[in-house]
Image (tube, rainbow, N blue to C red):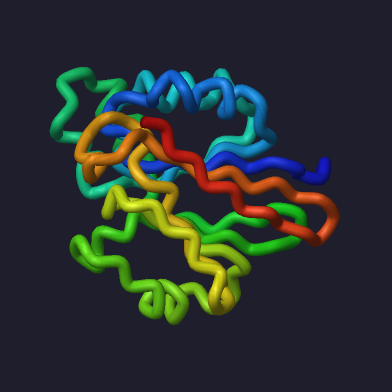
Length: 172
């Protein structure tokens, strides 16, 4: 498999991706969505932007909220957590709602000790915690819902050999 040089991480779109972020998504090797997608159109769009897309269900990604049978099936297939490999490094993804509205980086680290990187969403607050291993990232809310008085956010990772550079973005 081809070496990945860029990863875009989004979460909490709640049915909308801010237009500032779409160009980044179209020019990345991998897109990761950490839940609360809330739209099967977004799922289709992400697959149009990029060949490698990974996503998990958030607490608002509930099949019963959809009237269309096909939409219900798409949402029902989303897992609550996902573990993937990028350039031989393990990345674990979950929405993070099991911790309530407070981030629990230690709890995440205990749940996924083998990972290089743990990605979660739910809080709508961007966090890039590289103080300990595994690293823990929350990209913040990518849409326009409950952005805690800030603009839409996401995180991009640039990878060159074994060097992973985490770049947080917020738009106001």
